[in-house]
Length: 164
Image 1: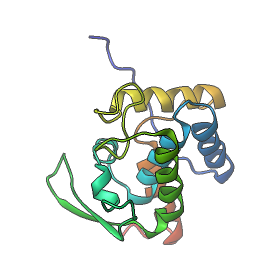
Image 2: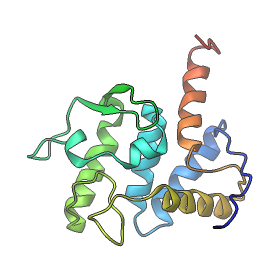
Image 3: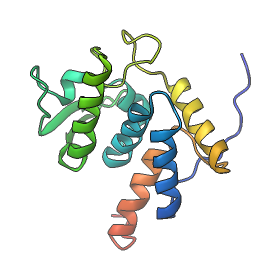
Image 4: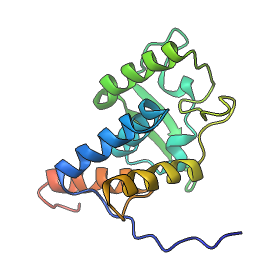
């Protein structure tokens, strides 16, 4: 097994760089809409990447494809229940839902693998996507945790640096 690189993942603090990362995720990959939506979901909900990637379609959408108001999940790491308010993601999730329909992608997973929709995208695969995004933009601090750290940083900033 290959030794894991020591990778110093940081939040994206600069809004222009954030936009470049989002544009790269969306436009430089075959499954760009999925990759972008994963990033947006993680940034908005502050979930760990494993919790985002393991979401099922039915966690977020009704059987008829209507976006739910809230998603109820459980942290894989801590077992703690989460209630996710989906309104801030409404536009991105509706566009993503339409993308899945247009592509004829049907899966129980919200973020299915490109090669096998019976599986969700893996953390390793999403790491490769974030790493390639960093390479394309000349950024050496992107990883699977970037979306969570970026979201937390934005909350920290919006609360005028009130950690509480």
